[in-house]
Image (tube, rainbow, N blue to C red; front, side, top):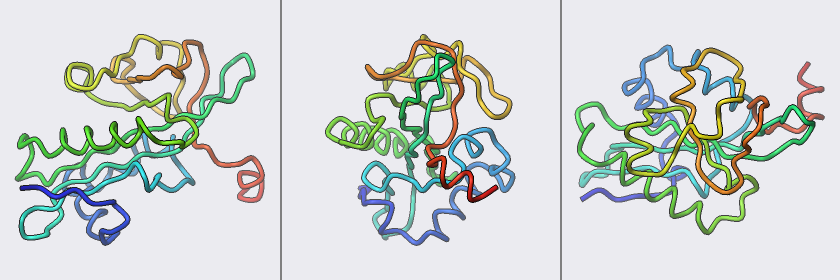
Length: 178
């Protein structure tokens, strides 16, 4: 039986090692990392799955991001992922349990942007089981390459307009980093 715990209770080094095993050491070059650059994961929406021996079996993280609409609006959103499962345990339902727990937590969360979840992933999986679609993401721009069919979102707050995704770092923090 897999136990779910807040991700904050798990050693960060173990999480990073799992992410490397699940996605490769070059994972930090992906567009998703650019979108969420400079922000920390949202603790109340990020979880770890532990096996019967207490070993890390999987993780899910959520991130505060922003949608800069071309009409000037700045809309908070939450980026879901990565969902990482120990390679030897993949296809055993751990990722699905993690996603279900995150969506359950999001449904009662007061985190800004939680009514507009997005991710980059397999539409056949995330659409079928979790209701994510590319229906409103066609005009979105990202800071790097992506497959438009894999840019998915769900929730009543998902913008149906053109604009850019990026991290939700306050302008003052961006200026001081420059």
